[in-house]
Image (cartoon, rainbow, N blue to C red; front, top):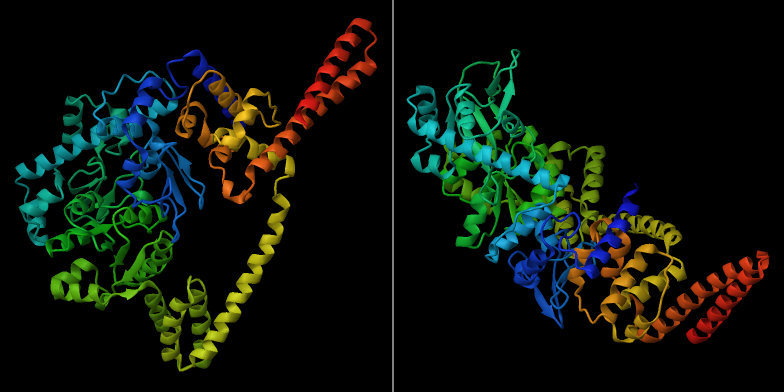
Amino acid sequence: MKKKEKAFLCCIYKLVSFFYGSEVLINRGFPAEFIKQVKQSNDIVSVISKSVTLEKKGKTFWACCPFHFEKTPSFAVNEDEQYYHCYGCGESGDVISFVQKYENVSFFEAVKMLAQSANLKIPEITDNSLDLEKLRSKERVLRSLNLAKDYYINCLNSTNDEQAINYLKKRKFDSQVVKNFEIGYSPDWKGLIKFLRENNIDFDTMHKAGLIEYNDNNEPYDVFATRLIFPIINTFGDCIGFTARTLLDNPKYAKYRNSTQTIVFDKSRTVYNINSIKQLRKEQKIDYIIVCEGTIDVIAMFKAGFKNAVACMGTAITSFHGKELKKFTDKVVLCLDGDGAGQKATFKAIDVLAQTGLEIRVVTLIDNLDPDEFLNKYGAEELKKCIESAASGVEFKINALEKKYNLNDNFEKNKFIVECMEILTNLETNSEREIYLKILSNKTNISQDILRRDMTLNLSNNFEQGENLGENSLISRPEGYVKAERFVLASIIHKKDYAKKVLDKKLIFKNPNYNSLFEFARNCYQNNKSYTISSLFDYFDVENNPDIAQIINFNFNDFGENKDIYFNECVEKLGVLALKQKQEELTNLFKNEKDLDKRKEIANQLNTIAKEIKNWR
């Protein structure tokens, strides 16, 4: 069955369930009344305002969208109808879907979080869907990881192993550091497995959690054995994985080992020490977050008094990292390793993080040192000075390109200018470009006027390319009939005053999803049942049905004034066209029908349709 057909059948099922009193929403698992209670107990404005700064204008609350970067607010929250919609990126939903998307959790997890915040008792989940099995598997994996974390901590606290003790001394990890970062130790290959089995964790769950592998004899072993363990904790306080440092002087063993990708751990989405950042924000305002390369750098920063440091697990910084950081601050300071690889990573990270709306500053550490080495050699005060004088992301790029080219050579100087122009062209404002044109002029001894003319030429070329793309997009504009269908149905669903009168009539839409929405609104009206836009997310599979999502997120501002007149014209067009289509079908049947009784029956139907067409006029 195709995805679109499945979504349509889902709509019909939910529609029937709504009017015949079905207790359970399809593919939801929780009783319908419980979902309703969860939503009523969690006002969408209150929930969203905990994460996003909302400003009320008229009846709507506005903010810059938390799901994409923008400078002008286009994220709207409707308190009366209890739903949100971003006119920039198109994201929309109810309070449950907001928590799902913002916290990156499943539907079940979002419901549980909201229920717990409202002190609601969570009923037994009855659904046997794949989503539920995934949730239960995730919970088993998290339990095993949290147990493993406790086991490793206990092992370190009780160990007499000289290698582990000496390493802590060498790194100057005192008891406060060990406690704060919940550092542990795995002394052997089997101890963890025995402990987990005693706590009813099966081998399959251990393997899914990335805790064990099997040797050539098919015997399980602890993958972090003989290593110092650094747990990775998410914003909910759960251990989702580990990074481990070997204590053996053996070239066969990698110095560091991270958890493999699991149902709860993905390096491209994980920020080490983000749990501490969340706690820190509860205590004070976070002006900026320092982004390092590894766990040891973060701990070194903490020891030196910088409690606002995180690491991206030694992997390339992604937009997911940026979005996670954006929840807690608007500014990041990149303090990656000073070697060639670190500088290359910084260059890429600037572009990725800037796209999430973060202000970027870059610390350049001398002698190609990493933060831990720099702190050991020069101390916290020197690092503080470096952070205070950190260059902007754009300035760092220009400085890096300056080192790449010999500016005393005219050919290389021109290449330097061309690459810098590409960077400056992507800046959003002329004022920002002027700042860096001045820097570029000083480095190249070329006047700002000449550089500005080159810049204008670059911008005009980009604009012409954008105009050409716009021409092509005209091909995909919807036809008038489709546009009329959308406007009429959106007016009905959003309960516009001018749309109420058609609910006594029978409208037929070409789009079957539109028909199910119309019947929903019509039946509510005829049975004196009220609904909110938020409730549509319970009875229709909005996320997987773009037709219905379009109606829910319809932008009436595109239609100017006199919407009531346009609505009447559209309704007449839809009503008459649908009837004329039926009239044409019956006329063809009448012509080909030989049986007199059937011809009489068809003739009666044609007379009825003719009267209905007259009534629409």
